[in-house]
Image (cartoon, rainbow, N blue to C red; front, side):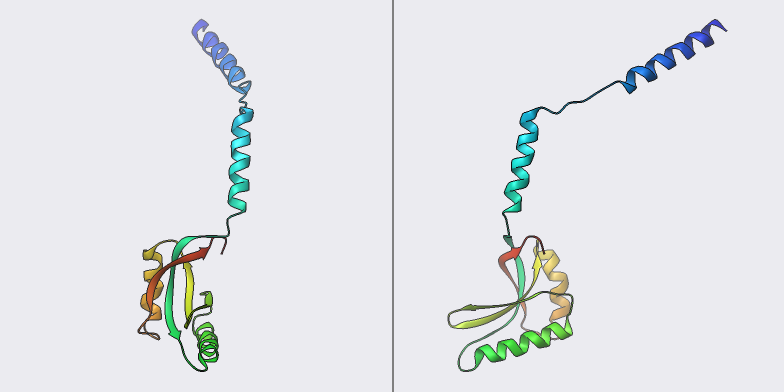
Length: 128
């Protein structure tokens, strides 16, 4: 009986001691965390990958690219489409992929409609 009371007594005090443990974060760590969050809030684009499905140049190339963009959106509604101009080409690129492997999964599906599509490194939207 004496052992049982001692065990209960020790258990009770150990529970009380655990309940009173407090942790405090040093102010410098809080500042570092705050600076880190602020720095990433300013980032819009990061290095990543997109799939280039086509490029047009010459007369009426912008209109052809816009038409192809609309067609792609209707065929693949879940994938973002970007039309860029790098002289002398209007390039139609799709998706925001962090890795080549991610892009490759969609590439195989897209190549059924656009057989000349390929993966290119690009700046992608971080928050997309």
